[in-house]
Amino acid sequence: SKQVNSIVDVTSPAPAQANSSTDTRPSSSGNAMPPAGPRANSDHLVEEQRDLREALRSSEQQSVGYLPRVRSWRLNGCQVDTMTTLAASKHLRPVAAAVEKAGCKLMPAWANGALMLVPTTWEQAMEEQWQPKFFHILVRDEDLQSLQNALEDLPRGGPHRGKPSLRPEEGA
Image (cartoon, rainbow, N blue to C red; front, side, top):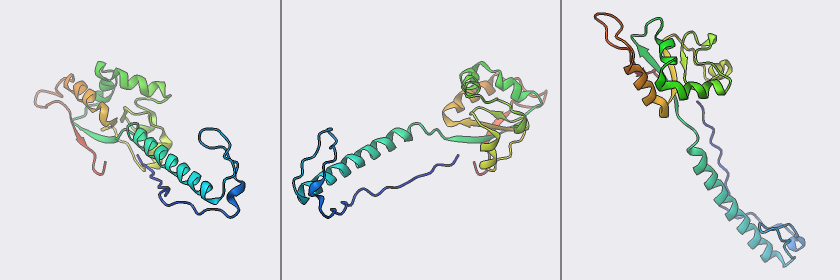
């Protein structure tokens, strides 16, 4: 997923406007600022900028915690019904419920058999230029352990085959 970073420079003081002694805008406390000359208005602008910097810093700190990393994984040793079995795993029930609650499917037709453990639309996949295949699993890092637990419950693939294993998709 793409992250857009926008930078707003609020560190340099704004130039004082000419004839600013008539400024009667409400202050952050809600009271009207009495006209007190250019210096008072400049102090008011500096205070507003300081408040804005603080609000931006707080907003950045809060948003970082809500942007989970999503990655595509390749499931080696994937059998025909492996993804369907994983989708029904007790370990992935909360993840599956969140995907369905968002109005998305765990294995949408456009995903070619891939398991989508993150609410994803065809448009989002196309925007990222991601072409899912039957061996792909899209998962948030925070749900990776639940996926590992579900994989542990899978039976071996045959008499000489081990259980399916995950590896990160190239460029993911």
